[in-house]
Image (cartoon, rainbow, N blue to C red; front, side, top):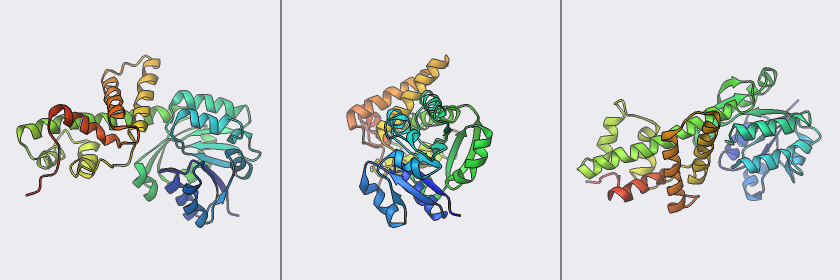
Length: 299
């Protein structure tokens, strides 16, 4: 018998993840406020629902991929939310919302005899499309045993622990480090360009040396040297993640001195280039201050 799953939030990550579920042979009930986003999935056989509640009326396990903590809380616990559905037992969330939100939603769902699964992911749109994401799961062990085969559809699964929000802690830390790598690499490359060094040569050296990181190996070659600044992650989302990371760390009594600087860099980028700009636009802020451009040289 084919299992029916629900998916709420068919955006840049939710779209390809939903397609992987359909390709794996699962039936899917989907909802998104942007109906145009649903069309490719409906063409593959997915069923459209009119609300998150309607999704949860048809599927025992509902996945969510949503941009902000307040939207997740509304979709999970609000009027016509997943918690109001008659069939859903488990809500598996792949969003990045922070441990505080995870705990609140877990408590709200528990009151309706539903189980929360914290499952933030890393790997971007390419990872969602190719099934190579890293999934950071926290939930009770028995629930993990049930959802692990589903999660494996999307990539490599890591069980972080049983408490709500533990997966979110790992994800926020990862995203803070990813943004920090862009900011620091931009400063290093700007110095090199100002001195007269070809940035591609400098990147090639760094990438076989101890300074290599995800920005120098991936983001700069793909989105900075060509000047496209289109790696695929919005500044507003990166800013949200780093803000959450710093706030949560400070609430735990963990100082984030360098993390606070990354947050400020993203605040400036968000203001200067807009929330829909790519988070690699942090590099443009550094370029502007340094009076250089970190671009591939054409002979």
